[in-house]
Image (tube, rainbow, N blue to C red; front, side):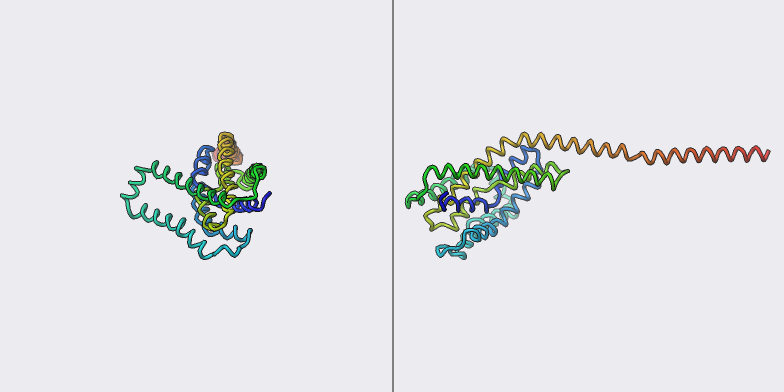
Amino acid sequence: LPQSLADGMTICASLPITVNMVLVLTKSADGDEAAAIFNAAFGNLIGVFLSPALILGYLGVSGQINLGNVFFKLGLRVVLPIAIGQFLQKFVPPAKEFVKKYKKYFKKAQEYCLVFIVYTVFCKTFLNGSDVEVGDIFLMIALQFVMLSFVMVLAWTLLRILFRNEPKLQAMGLFGCTHKTVAMGVPLINAIYEDNPMVGLYTLPLLIWHPMQLVLGTAMAPRVAAYVKRRETELTNQQQGEVEDGPRPDENTQLLMEQLMELDAAANGNATENGS
């Protein structure tokens, strides 16, 4: 596999999870939506700082990368819009109502902007040329599929061991542990490697992983939902069984008390006869 695609797979593995897709699939699988929201928000927040550290730690810092400039761009492109959005949502009610009213148009604009960014990234790569062949891309796609399948199986196995009695959390974790964000990943990669002619190939593994996780997640969501329903029924029946089994010692105690009362009544009867 060419070094550029291998580095792109490393970059993809270092990115935080997506937000909308995890929430939608968690809801479809009857998972823990509150945990999904927290996981996505917290993961993307720390990902602004953790992902660049992981990427540069794995791939190294070349002379073309200015760390100060990288974090400045990330702050300007990711942190600042989030801060402004939170401020408007909390302190400017008209802005909040405006966004709610035209939400679908804002979503479309976001998608078009993302497509434009990806387009410009690949234009730069194709303009400078690369040594990657079509066969290398198909090999990378196959490796991405194997890796995604492996991490999903690993996540599901560990979640069932660590959270045995929480099927909703297991469903959320299956998607929350394996998904990668394009909305934040592409600007992040572009901020770090903006002047690198291979930036398009660094982005390509992420653009393969994203639809792949959507297809696999959509196919698995109904089965996970059926598992959650079945597991919750088993846990409910188990709890009811424990409640039914619980009063048995009390029944023995009650029987003993009845026997003592009978003995006491008999003793009182004998005492009355002797008194007569």
